[in-house]
Figure 1 (cartoon, each protein chain N blue to C red):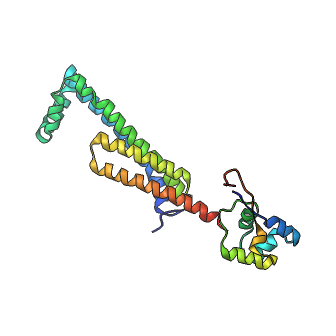
Figure 2: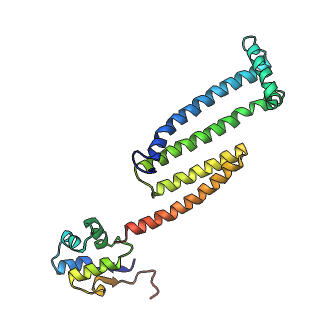
Figure 3: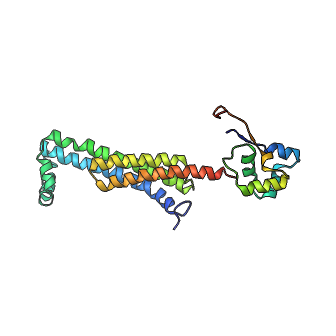
Amino acid sequence: MRYFGESSVSMYAHRILPVLWWLILVTALFGSLLLGVAIFSLDLGDPITHGVVQECAKSAMQTDPEWVEFTSQPLGVRLIVFPYLALITTLLLLVLGKSRHLFGNFRRNMVFHPENTATLTTISRLLIGFALLTANFTTLLVSLILLLVCEILRNGIVLQEEHDLTV
Amino acid sequence: MSIIFRLDRMMADRKMPLNELARRIGITDANLSILKTGKAKAVRLSTLDAICRELDCQPGDLFEHVPGPQDPD
């Protein structure tokens, strides 16, 4: 299996990531819209959507007690979910965008390039932020390992440069 | 760097063009150009051996140390 250049893992990732980027964006927007309808309908008592939301809430109640707890909170507290979701989505989209850039460089066989180290460091930092926001220990661990890989890559770039300038 | 590689002077003395020397010592023109312009960070002993053989000189004839501001003397 090839990792760099054309017809490699990098090429497929470079092609798939934009699709994933748009998919997440659309899902996030659609999800926010649904969540907004659900939150506001419970309070405003909208006659059109209230019945639907009540049905959804009833089915959610049976399966997810967190939803029940969430809906019992005051409106101000419930609205905090929007900036939280927006932040998580933004971080995720930035990670995917930066990853696409990285895979683009790998596709062009630019592996030991200073730009890649900077991109990978940014991805690691964004993932650390994502891990802290979502309280995901595994992502945090992966991000820290990625930071170490950045340092290894940085050393690799120095060695590559030295190798290129050794005649 | 305080070490100057005097390849250009040695080549001029022997009227040896860059591409001809590159061909004889078995490296690319681009790499020999890196060496000639002083951009190289290191020289392999095998390359140095080939240059000395083709230019009929000693390694000491190719290098010169010019004390810079960071040198102790």
